[in-house]
Image 1 (cartoon, rainbow, N blue to C red):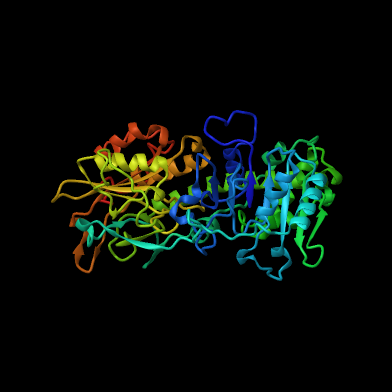
Image 2: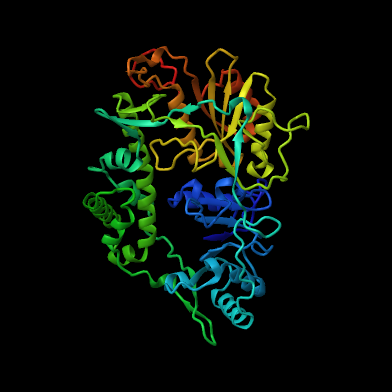
Length: 527
């Protein structure tokens, strides 16, 4: 899905126009993971991140791309089927070109599957009939002549190729391990699974949806939507368009459909049906009749999902911490094959002659774990942090962690945290102190950031971690293992907070969980 917005940039959020971050927050609230959303603007290009460059890769998680002018400027997305145009446009030719650029198919061939041979256009400001008439006329007269597949193209237009980067000579054979969140059931130890170990253990019995019902106004306006379906048909008239009215929503509330929409939150359909039934009872008590329930079905389901998502996260946190307290959930180095192992090589798509990140003295960076460090593999904020780390005299090595393919931390919410940096401090002959750092842009100080901050704070500061066990006759508690700290820093604060993290004296957390100790031994293990 491509979403065209009216404003981008950090200084235009309060302009009254639809901003890229407004859309990002709406998508997160609708159930998207942060990794599934990419912004491509003049200020931010999430698609330049190593894990996002090949949009056709089976491991690429991007589902929605937010942009303002990238499509008009010639950038092609290889398989965008849904355009949501939230920007006002009176230029029908420009809109025609815009839709032409998203009406694409991988490798420019029909699939034979109806749903994949059509695109959908949702407009916000423009009159749908006029826009689609112009689009249809333009496509029929001009054909699809600009149908060009450019996946992750460099300036040459060639698809990028992967190359291997090796570790720096001094660390070529160094074993580096990071702890994972594990579940211990008897003698079975495995990495935590959100759906199995958290979501399925939430008890929804007795949940009262009345507060959700109270948020739905009896006199709410029914929102008409502008929606058009454009299909590739072939022949003399290769494009067809048909209107799909937003008012086609049935004027009755379909309880079974509502239950299906919340199965990702409440997995048990029988319990879900009880919740929906209680919600309808509360709405009827508030004056809703059958017609109003049907007319506002979409709004009711949306509010139900939002309310359940909020409650799910609260209950999931309780499940996680209760299991941590009794030792079922563990977070520490194990040295039994269940820790995360830092690879000895990593991939890059940068050409060998691509620009490098320069140190403060102008030369190449000297303490990165992998070499060299290319500018395209880090965004501008990350480059600033990397240069700062590299200049610290006590730092031994640092690494920019690659999301989705390298180190990730699973907590009590579905989305993993993929920290941005891992770095190690310590003098030779002494145990290392390894810091796992997540950075966030100033505009992303939101609910998602609060969750990540709370989880990292809990993992770092809680006294719940059990002491290392004796395995194979070796007392691992006597081994000189590294110590760990986990932190989240907003980019506006990194110059103040990073020195404290480097020195091992992080600023006291302002998290609600700062003083929260889960019952456990008073002496922490090295992990």
